[in-house]
Structure formats: structure tokens, C-alpha cells
Length: 340
Image 1 (cartoon, rainbow, N blue to C red):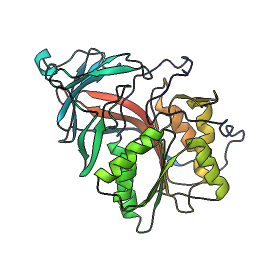
Image 2 (image 1 turned 60 degrees about the horizontal axis):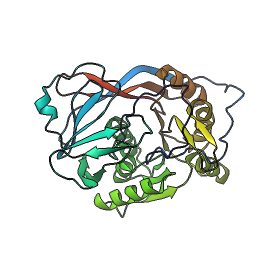
Image 3 (image 1 turned 180 degrees about the vertical axis):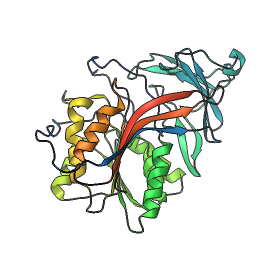
Image 4 (image 1 turned 180 degrees about the horizontal axis):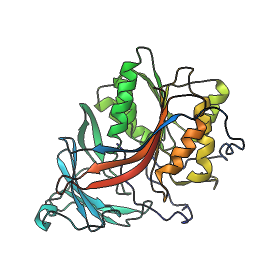
């Protein structure tokens, strides 16, 4: 699962500092230029706004939030992390927050380095977690993330339904795949999965999660490479996929100083994704974090990109419903094209 991120200033220049796993630099070379001619054809139907909620479960819960923080339950552990959108006051008394097993301290910026404080007892780097019966490892990172993204569960269940209902072999491409939960869900449902991430560490964690989940025999290709370059090469090879998951970072730097910026790079990447769909595609799912924009922006982009292909484009926000006061914490924007 992928973590919520702090909203960052749109005009803030990208940093050369290393990025956290899964948000590794998105472009080692200049991405495909944005299309210059608008596609002809009828645009897909639209459904918006669509708010996809994640509710508390035994695996994960947003217990409380407020004053720029969030109190979460990840399996056996209670964790406190920064949350810039929590501008309200906490609903629970301080004594409930004091029960935390781990607290992230230090730089609260999305790319800032920090450290974890363990007030009750020292904890190791990883701990056992589960999502919908899939075992994996939670992990403390220096970027305040824990290797899982609970709000993405709505997309995963939707994807699993498409795979199981297809009645045929399904190929899934997971770009910017991070530590692999989406890939494991797809593989468990019977899909052949290609998982791409530019971070060697993230790929290592994903492979470890596959073993922990008992899915080592499932067909998952783990590719450590720049996601944009990989997608463009797949187009040249004539490779095709039925479902594509996209979770690009807002900013990134390649090893040679090349800059990825979501607003300039995303149109070309979406175009590439359209071009590597099979003749009977199922869906393309785009999630956007850490940007100052409305979901209407990516909604319009997706409808333009999939003109002439039928289906519909559904767009809105991913939110997590809090247990204490039932407030909804928005984590990201999304837009997905669905064939049916």
C-alpha cells in the first residue's frame, strides 16, 4: 500500500536529494514529448466525483488525526506520522496518542530525512503485516513511510475484480510499483505481472514480500528500471498489457540531472500507456500525490488520451475514513479509464 504524502508547493524546485523507495527518479532520459494533436473520436463516458474510501480493518486503521499528525494502526503497531492536511484538532485525548509504538520525528517534508522514535521498546526495521489475507512486511524508512499505502486498497479490489471476471489470461503492468502489494494482489488473482520501479531497494523489498506472502510461484517479473524508459521500450517491442497501474512522483531527478515533472511528463507517459494496451484492454489507473491540482486536471487528460476507445473515465479522490471522529482524510487524486 502506498502512503499519504504531504502536499507540496507546486512551484517548489525538485531536490537533488535521494528520494524514498518507490518514489525513485522517474526519468533517466527526456520522456516522450506531450502530444501536439488532440485525438479524434468520441471521448469515454465520465463518472465524477468518485470518492473511494478505505475503512478501518484488522489490518489497518486511521485511529485519529489532527494538529498536523495522524495516529494509525498497522497490524500490531500504533504509529504517529506527520499529516499536513490534518488541520483540525485530534478527537482522542493525549493518553491515546501516548500509546504509540513508533513516532516519526525530524523533517516533515516529503523528501526530508528523519528518524523514528520508539517510546515503548526498541523495534526492528520490519514487522509482519497483512492485507486481505496476503502477508507482507511493514518497514520503517527514513522518509516517514512504512512501505505500505492503505488508501490504494480501493484500486486493488477493483483491479482484482477485473482480473477474476475477465475469463482469460490477463497481463498487468505496475509502473512505479514500490514494495509490491498491488503486484501481489494481481498475481494472486491469476494475472501475469510486470512490476517496474527505479529503486533497487524497493525491488528487493517487493521480492521479499512475494516470499513472505507465499506467492513465489506466481508469474511476476521484477524490473529495476526507469518506468518511463521501460514503457517506451515496451512500445517499441510491441509488448502489450490489459491493465496498467501508474503512480508517478510529482518530481524526480535522474542520475545525470535529468528532471521529471509530473505536469510536463505525464501527458507523454499516458500516451505511451495507451499505445501498449492489448486489443481488449481492461483498465488504466492513474494516482497522483503531492500536487496542487484538482482531479479535474487528470480527468480531462485521461478522457482526451482514451478518446475513441469507449469505456468510461472515473476520477476523484482516495480517502481514509478515521475511526475516532469519522472524518475523511484525503490522500491523493486519481483517474482511471475502464473499458466496461
